[in-house]
Length: 386
Image (cartoon, rainbow, N blue to C red):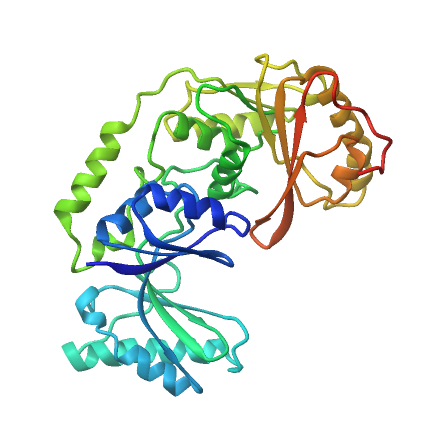
């Protein structure tokens, strides 16, 4: 039986996620702002959770209706057969998002949906589930437009960009699914050289190594749907087993990372080892401006630092033209990609971008700039000429 699902993703990656979901068996694929709607049976849902590198979640659409007041939303939520899908012992959390809704308080809507779910359970079982906002077993999402509300059950649990291994130190500035999406946009293929010369915590390197070894990104973690009462255990076991069987053993890959900051190289190494990929990637401490290419051609992809503290902007303004000079002098034959929220980079790097792709890193609007370094064809432009 076909069900309806919705997968949010980093904004700008919706068409790329739509292509990926098609390869996982999804049908009725409909990209929209912030994600992709699709249909499929539960096997498609299980595969999307396990194998999608780009989705943030997979949400199962349970109910939709018109509303004028909070009580309309309560009635819709009360009518859903929640007790069929999970038990009263599962903790819950309600997430509400809205676009152009006339209702003023999302907190009150959240409360009314929670009341509806609890009242449903009390009617059916005589008991009510507990709320856990920090680590719930079950996440229920409501999305409101001007006059319609849609209710979803989250099949993923923790966001899918949390791949299941413990990263070193602070949270990476680049989410894993955005990094994987950028690799897809670059056209990089396993076997082709890949370098991140400002690798930070190693997110691009880990994603690329998992792609090269055909490691499903969800193999190291669990999912909310595994708690659902109607879980098809045999189907899920076969999907997981097939992904395990495809996984290639670690080996040395043509994937290279470096950073001028030694601590960043250490963090990247810890993260690669945590992901079981420590022997797959060549890591060095190096200054990008002096770095020699590890191959005659390949893909350079990086998320360079941009100024947030006083004085940094001036330092970067001096650095960007040197990036352009380094690319021109040493990186012919390479496709080079810079993700940045700094509007000064394309002006000061002094090279003509062959492509600019708008992407969002969380709420931060960025651009992915592509520079195809063809020998003899890249002419240095004066600063400020983009």
